[in-house]
Amino acid sequence: MKDFASGCAGRKDLVYDVIVAGGGAAGVGAALAASRRSRVLLVETESTVGGDLLTGMPIYGAWNSLGEQCVGGVLNDLVAECRQQPDGFIGPVCDWRTVYGLCLSPAALHLAILRLLHACGVHVMLKSTLTRVGAKDGHVVELEVASQDG
Image (cartoon, rainbow, N blue to C red):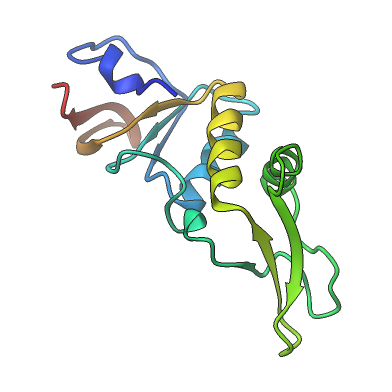
C-alpha cells in the first residue's frame, strides 16, 4: 500500500469528513466504519496499521462464553478477508476458562486490513503525527500533520 503521506506533503487543500488519529485496532475499526458514509483520513505514527491486532494473540470478546459470535460489523469484513487467504482464519478457540478468542493469522489480518482500507477509500498517512488542531465555532476546520515527508 502506497503511503498517502508521500503524495500530500505541503498540500493545504485536502478535505475529509472524518480524521482518525491512530491506526491500531480501534482506529482501523473507526476508519472502516466511517468510510461507509464519509471521506476518511487515518493518521498513524508507525510504519503500518493494525497495532496489537498483528501480534498473533487471540482477539477476545468477539465470541461469548458459549462459543457464539457476538461482535460483527467491521470484524465480519476482516474475517471474510482472512478466510480468503490460505491458513488466514483459524477460528474461535476456547482457552478452557469459558473464554473464546478469535484466532487469525497476523499476516493474513494485516493484508485484510490493508485491502479493506484501500477498498473503502480510506486515505492513510503513515509515519505521521497530528500536531495541531484548528477549530471555529466548535468545529474542526484545519489540522496540521507532521510526517517524514514534510
